Image 1 (cartoon, rainbow, N blue to C red):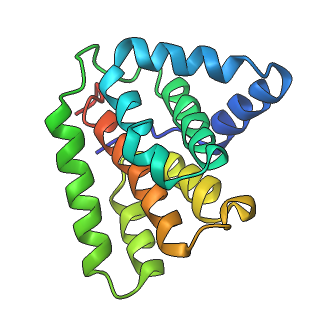
Image 2 (tube, helix red, strand yellow):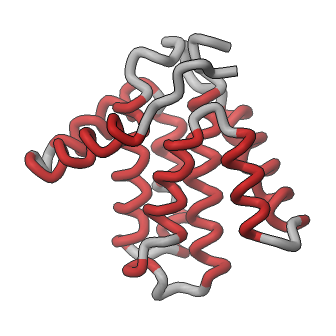
Length: 161
C-alpha cells in the first residue's frame, strides 16, 4: 500500500502554477505523451472526440497533465502496456454498470485508490465541474471513467508496488 500518497497541497500548488503559466500544463502533457503516448492517444481517440465537447476533452487532458506532474519521480520508467489501460477501462465500466449507488461506488474507489487525492481531483474536475454538465450525467460519467482508467493505469507503474 502507498505509504506516502500525494496531498492536496501538492495538487493545489500544481494547479496554481498552471494559473500563473498557462503553457505549463501543455509542457506536462507533452512530457506525458513522450513517456506514455498510448495513454494520451486513448484520451484523444476519435471515439472520445465524437462524444465529448472540446471543453470536456481539454479538461481531461489538463487533469491528466496535473496528475502526471504530481506523480513525477514516483513511477517506473517502463512504458505503459496498452492492455493494462484496456483492462482498467473494462473493470471501471463493469463496476459502474453493476453499481446501484454511484456515491457508494465513488467512496469505494477512493478507499481502494493508492492515490485518493488524485482521484478526488478527477471527481471534482469532471463529475462536480458545473461547466461540464451540458451533457447527460451518463456521458459525464463516461468522461470520468475514461480519466480514472488513465489514472489507474499510471498507478500500476508506481515505484512502491
